[in-house]
Image: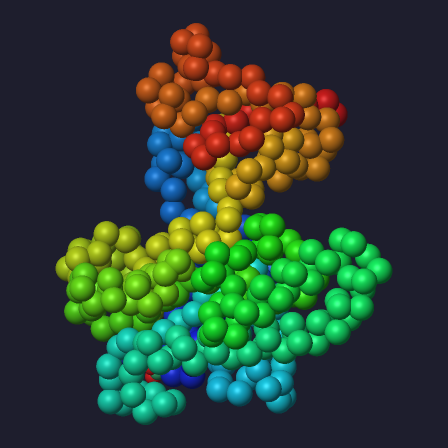
Length: 361
Ligand code: GDP
């Protein structure tokens, strides 16, 4: 499955956040036999539609989609120079499918900042500079080979052109992601063989003081720093306390802070979206469940997420949209009102599809 690597300077609250992530009981509660790597935190993607489905189908349990966050040791200035930890650090980021930067905004005299002052803007620049420098090295290493190959192989000329374009962007001090180049774009595909870091989608978690959680002007300022990446604002210390509370108490504490959901839930939702994922839904008396697929997945691909045999023997998918299901109250009623569709193997799954697959075994 896809993973999001958590990076950030030392002392910004990564461990605090990660502890809250791992204490989050979404996996332990639903998959008691799952083995979880110690450096992986699994977050549920909140989906109120599951509550409604469980009601309609009298499901015994609800299984949300999840996102895996991987704790990557603290980045330091000079990581791109490849000394010891630096190398290992970059290798871990390379294995991640998205990069989540934790940025310190909270002020606390007792917590030392590595650069002596709290400045989200400077910290973002420090981290991005290391990632950009690492990419520039990959580019420089590949260029002589690509130049040679492009003389003999026509298709390599396009790769070379894309790499030279990328080099320009990096030299301007910009990440490829911020220039609109991601793995799915034409440019991104041409760059694939270089395994660059800054084509990965970025996501920013600002670890803020409590009063900043509702400070819209402050938040807009931070959002502008990281656009087009998403920004999430939370207080890691409070998040780790919320985990210990029961739902009612947690809700009360959240409301007192002007929040409608825990930062953890926001992180799950935004992280999932950043990875380019979406869900479809299934429901029955056993469970109401959100299944994870890539955006743009077809019906047989979606079936394959449940079981590879479902994909191989795929015949049709019977689909009712969540809204139609709620309106009609049941699948038979939806059928009677012409709201159930039979879709074939070319159908592209839509968000909110409630599905039952028909397949040969
Ligand atoms: P890491 O080095 O990035 O993993 O940072 P830690 O999670 O170890 O946090 C460093 C210090 O900052 C610890 O003493 C934490 O208790 C403290 N800390 C973390 N988050 C917050 C926060 O939101 N507010 C305050 N005041 N302190 C925090």
